[in-house]
Length: 279
Ligand code: PDD
Image (cartoon, rainbow, N blue to C red; front, side, top):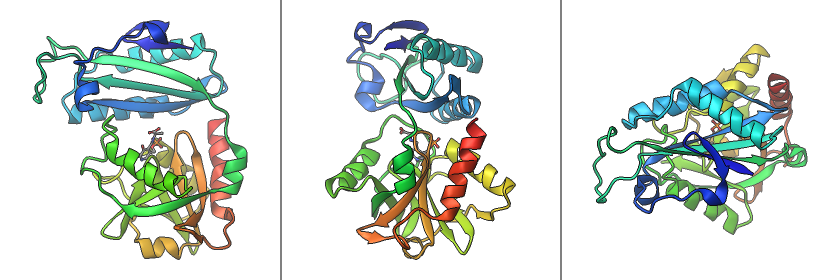
């Protein structure tokens, strides 16, 4: 599998990242994950827009236009013959010496861009079966809207889940559910779908945009409204969403079954609508 380093397609072992790279030193950078289906990127423009929005928020000067970025990503996808899979890319604030917290002059220190791909089919069995999760306090920072490569808080939350054999960690702030370690969180109660509104406490998920859209078009009531842990535990259905897992049923929370412990009808309907949106 080839990778992208700035505008060049190279072998992965040819990429040498400088130890003074601010991404490596400070986690100073942004990333995105886009999914490809049947050789085409899904919602590429939305992901690219989010990258540009994030860059503006942290005064990161991106080394390409939106179109140039898209062209690079397509080139890599074709080179690696990705039909269905993920493309990961990140941009760091470049190599600034000596180490200094403050941002360097972007004219002197250009951003560094890398991208890689993986072939991953949809895990239909898991999407039918659902996953178990834990809940834990959201210990991350207050800029969760920025898709930063600084992911230690998220990584720690995911590890807590893995320690007890669960797959995701539902985070909450003072009992209000925010999001998973790498997913947005949803619940269904009395036929209404709830998810935390965008803002600084959650990532504005691209999958969330798609799910809200298909749900509204199908006439399913949706509320972008925060809900509590207690509401979550009494929900009819719970699910998480992301580019890589689409809509994933959650069938067990902290060792207790959600409803009957099986995928519910609303998430099943959303999964089907999502597949249609992709095709
Ligand atoms: N994660 N919330 C967090 C904290 C995330 O990291 C992600 C995505 C999402 C869902 O966003 P989207 O629907 O745009 O993928 C929500 C990616 C996939 C990752 O880190 O691998």
